[in-house]
Amino acid sequence: MVLRGLRRHLPPECRITAVVTAADDGGSSGVLREQYGVLPPGDIRNCLIALARVAPEVLAALQYRFDGGSGAAHPVGNLLLTALDMVAADEVTAIRLAASLLGVRDVVLPATTTRVHLVAKLGDGRQVRGESQIPRSGVPIARLRIDPPDACPAPGVLEALRTADAVILGPGSLYTSILATLVVPGMVEAVAAAPGARILVCNLMTEPGETDGHGVAAHLDALAAHGLPRHTFDYVVVNTGPVPMKVRARYSAEGAEPVRVDFAPSAGPPLVVADDLIDPGPVVRHAADKLGPLLCTLAAGHSPRERGGDRDTGA
Image 1 (cartoon, helix red, strand yellow):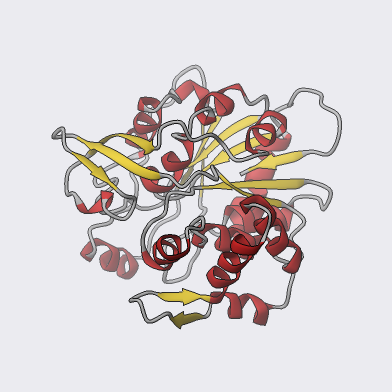
Image 2 (cartoon, one colour; image 1 turned 120 degrees about the vertical axis):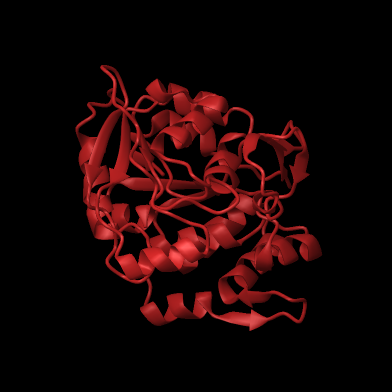
């Protein structure tokens, strides 16, 4: 929703760089990763589709799932990225080729091209390995790291952060998506040093097994525990729109609830930006056409340092 909203409301000359986790090991992505040794394609596929400039039927075809006979139904987009990953010179080139097929003028990058796994230290001292296993522990997550620990950001990632007018984190699974990207060595330091606006878009709902009972404050505390204290962020975007009772009851039955806006603003950053940002449909998610203009306004009003060349909005 962030990428779709930005692309609709940013001027055409503004470029977006989307940096996505490379640690997924579940579902179709996990099967393709294990069988072919490729980067997990699922999150990359979704980002490319959000930024694509092709007919809706093409996008629907990329999301169409075929049964691979291995217990996972593979979206066509995952199979395309896997094939390109296997024949292209490198992973970043493979994604660039897929982007060209979809008319994407922006950039999608994996956080790292190293084949990494997430390792979570739980509140009871145990460790759990694997992105898909972490939410199943039933114990609060204390810290997250990647294995191998010396993985480095993919080519282009740190430069995108260094030159961005805005760095937007979230929404997404706090530990297995947002922090899974940030724990790649060098990422936290690059975000903290980014000259543009640093914006956290807080999740709408808690996620069972990851953020049970978390309000906005607990989300910020988790980021601080991994090297991004609250004052790192210029803005925290929160939703004030109501979740319909029927929808809320369905999510509650699965162990999820709206994220409480329990963060008390202080004299310094971050500034809390609150608005009705929810999509009115049956799935609780941000509305691209509400979130996009708000993020563009925050980025434009932050007075970034003077830099040459095109503007780059890192999401």
